[in-house]
Length: 212
Image 1 (spheres, rainbow, N blue to C red):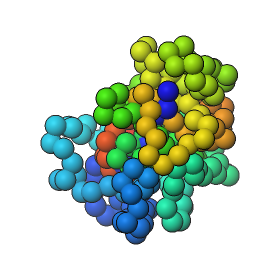
Image 2: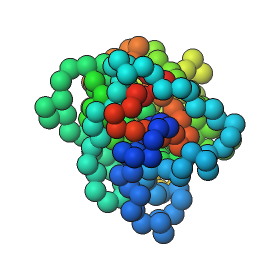
Image 3: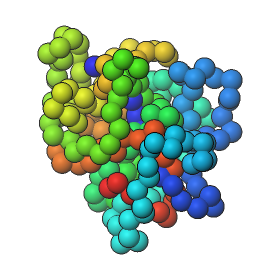
Image 4: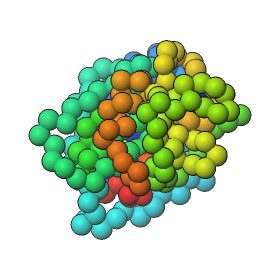
């Protein structure tokens, strides 16, 4: 299985909204273009309600996002935890932006372009605790290697490394990331840490990651 990443963008005032890739090449094919900003909330499907912001004391206040220039393409990732203190970990996956981000204590320490489920086997939205970890996992359904697997659901949805990622590929519902990034993610997250999967919500610096 392969899955898709999330660069969670939660609602908030337009001032200060993270829009790291608003300048990126609009001509890039939809399946391969990786951006870190999404349309204004008014353009998002009305059927996806957004939770109210958490109190200001929430430990998952977004304090920093990585400065990632240019376009993230399939197979790209960034990791920088320099100077970041210990703290609670939250992973966000934004299917619209096609990005997975990991935050520690509110600081983004890693981000990667992702693969995710196709229309016949979509990646589910919601908040999922990591329930199992296996560095050398092999899918019992498809016989495919799923290195650094972190399980999210009982029916097999997980985040895992995807060898040989190519533009246009889809998964059976999992979120697929580069193997080297998956290894870092695997060691940074633990069982019970939350993974928040959305479809284009906003994330504001200084605001809480609501679902966390």
